[in-house]
Length: 276
Ligand SMILES: O=C(O)CCC(=O)C(=O)O
Ligand SMILES: [Fe+2]
Image 1 (cartoon, rainbow, N blue to C red):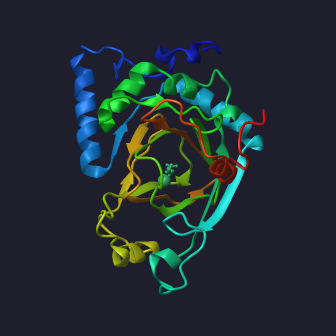
Image 2: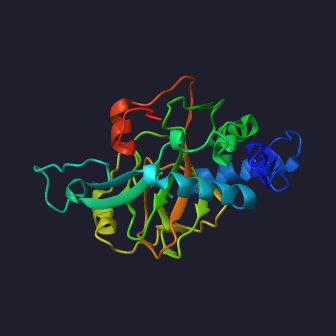
Image 3: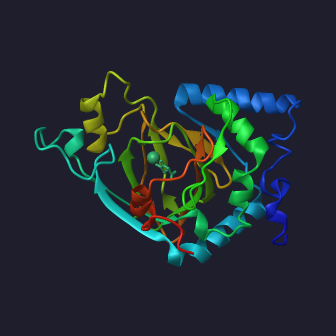
């Protein structure tokens, strides 16, 4: 397959399995209904085999080419994404349990304009289907030069420690390459609610205790995943082996014209805006 092909949605998405561009196809309605109810119940839903093999291979090659310019992110933080604890609370309170996380972040401007991830992200029928799944009237692309389409790479030892997401109502990820071992996405659906933080139970999980409410989400390469991480504790377990875990990450907005906060960009990408 040549370079031009992955700029076409039909070469990037398995449209025979996911006919998102056919509004009257009953399979489209079934997919949307199934994802809506999975997301409602489990706080995540999956669309296995979403990406074509040619697009997946191209996205992996793009990531490996851009990796030397990516941002190495390592931080100690609590599960609320804060870098400092609260001295007025006990040392084993979740706000004082610091966990280390490390990943390699590739911003949107490090991915080529022909990236299959960009083809997918900007395709209106996908935006419409995702809006229906998450229950929004419409979704819009993020217009920041760095934020809308990212690739997150995990080398051996990299991990994302247990955390609650702070900003996005939902996150969309696309598994591009699985590691040899580890790198498992785990989520505890509905860990907390607005009026119950469940600090004691969160402490036990942060200390490494098993809990049968925690799900390990099977992530086959090519699988698209939507999850709501704001009230559901989640992590990526440490990656083992030489093969990188490579993940596409996408941010949609509920209004047009959203750009990022330069300070947030500085933390996530190591720079406030585009430099290339
Ligand atoms: O790499 C992943 O699977 C998910 C990372 C994550 O926690 C997030 O994007 O909020
Ligand atoms: Fe997260």
